[in-house]
Image (cartoon, rainbow, N blue to C red; front, side, top):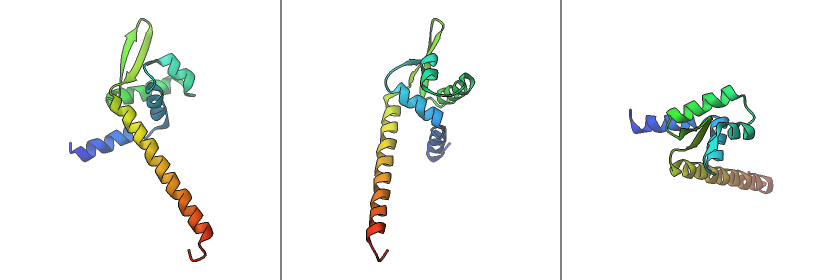
Length: 109
């Protein structure tokens, strides 16, 4: 598989709000499934499906601690990727706000 296709698959994996929220929560450290459920308003079966997608993609790993299944980010690079996404969004939104201001004040636009 070419690298660009692998990257596209990674970004497709990140293309679901529940998956992004799980990754955000795991930035603070390992979490049991029950703790993730308490933070994310989804059905347990839906969370389980999304965790399986993240696991298959290699973005999270899981361990069993007694009756609990605990998830963690597979690498700190995942947190770095989320931080980069946050920075990109901040810049894009700032640029849009700047454009709106220009359009509102520039009579030649």
